Image: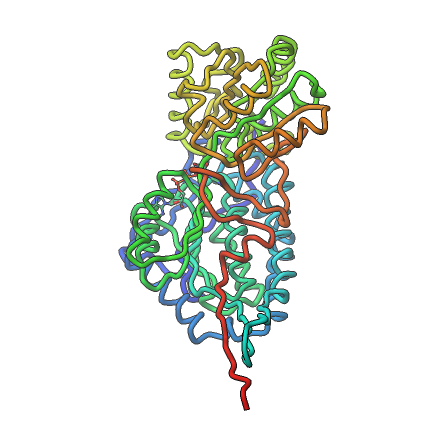
Length: 489
Ligand code: NAD
């Protein structure tokens, strides 16, 4: 049953220097509800000139505005207020995220938005704890360090967790005293625009957070090349990260990269099988598989293969796509028609390369419309098949069978990516041994997809570098100045 839409998204304009403005060219583009295929609203299509205006506003706010001069305690209060306002507007923000991205309301209201609020409150706590040190140098000198903000941060975010991944960048940037230009993905700009209003309501000075929308290849590129930007924080595809590194080289910007993944989920025969089946399902089907850390390669020990796969397939078949606005739905619409076609293309490739399709595999519709793909499981996959090598970014699981620990670890690590991994076993020592050997920024033991504002998150290998969340993120939003004082008479 279709659920009535209670939120009417406003036409999207650009938020620059505390004011709402149209793109310089006056151009707009539509943002589409993937659950219905209908246009939600028009969004301003920013270009190079708009990037420049936003950077100038952020630059002014950093170089001469009240923000960097404000006491850390006052900055903390504003960050805390942003967190509380995110909670206050949970229903509205969650609905906007669901309309734009197709994820179920259950996820956007009960998981994404509460974590956004927590991230702001977590970094509110840090604002007053960022400080330098005194250093025991030789001679009659005092040496101390100042930990200073970088300046203007460009936060470039993808469409899978639009406001959540924005918060991972904006909150630590602000806690450290930087100013920000936020660029959401073109498929999902609505919550970032509403967030701009929330920043203003929380008392953030004009120009400290600017939100601009437009194509990554034009607007994002302009930010990356702009000499007024000091740091780029990007979450996106690995090839986008590579392009950003090349484009930022001319101005030698600091860059942190949160990129793609092809994460192994390794189930040993001595695991709690029911828990591992739940973990494998959540690992690949949560967020429709549009999750950078999705457990998209499932390694199952041969001895339990048949039992395990039977349970897994039963579970996958029960999980049917539903209207994302229905609070009972647990599996929503793929973010766009193009992404749906990409996912279906990989499913065809899996079949063509000889993998065995054991669940799903088809496009689905809900109420006769929308861009949905059934939860899909392949068995009999080899690690060198395309569906085991490339990030699909959709609900497609590649199951690979293994015989012993050595093979499991070797094949789990046999990927250019290294974002996350999981291991399932009742043997504590084995779990920790394998966790050490897995080349990934996050390893889950007997669980999957846990996140917390205090726990660092980021990639090994081609999944990027730098860490988001936790104390580790602050390192990437500050720089250290060494000050020498002559103490001689
Ligand atoms: P994308 O790389 O296409 O776009 C990400 C953002 O970068 C968008 O805002 C886009 O407009 C912008 N962009 C694109 N080209 C650019 C350029 N040349 N210069 C500057 N900006 C540019 O990624 P997506 O399709 O939006 O998101 C999916 C990808 O994000 C997947 O690969 C996924 O694994 C990755 N991801 C990673 C993490 C992580 O933490 N490691 C988390 C979520 C998603």
